[in-house]
Amino acid sequence: MVVELDVGYCDTRAEDLGWSLDLGPQPALAVRDLAGDGGLGIQLRLLGASHQVVVRAGPGRADPGPDLGPVCLETLACLPDQAGPVPAETLAELGRWRYTFTSHVGRHGPAEFLGLVGAIEREAHSGILGRYPGAPGAVTAVSLLSRGSDLRWSTWHTYPQQGAIVTTHSTLRMVGGHGERAGRARRGGRGG
Image (cartoon, rainbow, N blue to C red; front, side):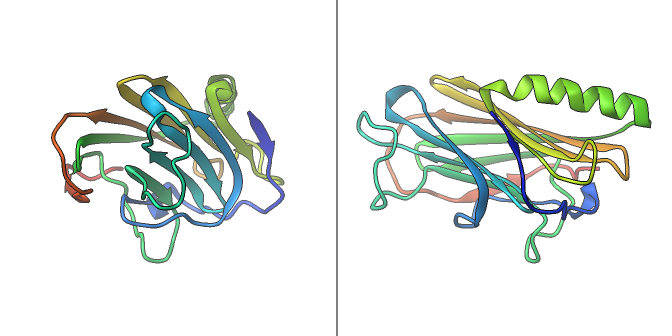
């Protein structure tokens, strides 16, 4: 799903992105709701400042309702309280779920950058991609790669003025046991 966003491009540098599992839902410019195996509800959200992925678990339905909090709420965005750089690697235990996250910042010349943006646009068919007006090559995309027992997604955040592309890969896997959302994250190396 491709969306022509109606707000100006507000991300300035790849280094301004911050990552969090602790923010609530932020105002979205575009949303795509998808269903995963086992009643998982997956919401891909494009923000004016980048993206959120919200995963909810429910008994055989995509959206269990507001009474159940999300299993996972990944935010990667340029927000005042979420300063970068984005971690290169992160592991978090979220109740009965294990979340892994990796990121990479690539820098490219103008022709290579635009070619890679074209490839990202083709990849985003299983998710959502937003194009920002007035900035050729400025996109944010989230692609759902797997809806099974290992829920996997990738994201891309492009910065035409730097020729930078931030690529992330996330996995959410049920590991058994009971308990509330732990919300503890162990961060690996720094992105960049």
